[in-house]
Length: 351
Image (cartoon, rainbow, N blue to C red; front, side, top):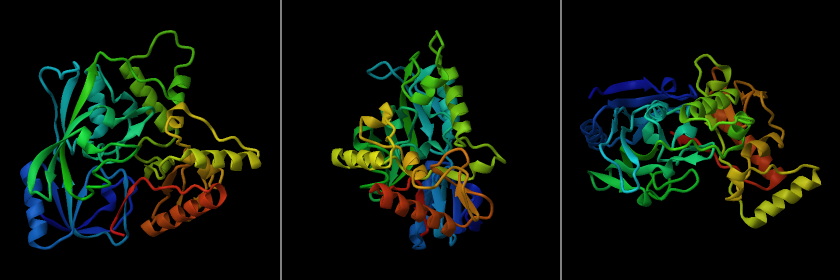
């Protein structure tokens, strides 16, 4: 395990923003993780665990302690099936998420095909219960192997104990900072049909007589994400971001009715999406755009993606402070107009 000093963190994120790490190590094994934790504790250094860098904003000051980059790789298809006849895949936390999705699709196992093209690593998926186009990883996660910082040992957390909800889990709420994710086991359906409930996917395959297979669904999702600037393409102007910066708000019945009333006064109709309506979720992108923050609008070095209103992008040379200023401007304006407080989706580090 190589200990490095003053390592720039911005190149390790999709935002390309952030100051340096005082100390930095890359952990390729469980032993490396344990050694890094011991090192941080022996020197009384604050510890931050870095995954794929796709869902975070690092402060301009960087991180004053030790950054532990999880690089445990490998995709192993377990022999046999679980009680429901599903195939189990044991995947290292440092493995590319999209590489695993591709692997599952090639193996003709359904359950994660609609999560194609999401940047970042496998270890980050249980943390915020990653979801897109009608699927969430909580539907397929069997268990999560972690290093428990409180107990000082490796243990397994079953799906039920993960406390999954919309974009949340125990890993980013009640037990935040307690666990370092080492490996994740997914249970996928062999020979299963693709999940085609989301409106964008239905439109993509509209008029088709035969059901698309998993590979075709994966390519469709990647194509749709690319059109929205949500597929990381080197050199693409809208790709230096953390993806969707705000969560779709989950409203109470009363809040939802109040929002509809506000919209009617303005001659607008709150869009209804089956995938959102079941939990009284509303489109954060719709709220942002109807608050004056249109696609492609620039605010100095930062701006709104020209393809998706939810993505704050680094136009080049942006600082974390500029991103935060725009974030707060959007939150304030949306709350003033619609009475809804938008919650950021990326992890904020070093602020």
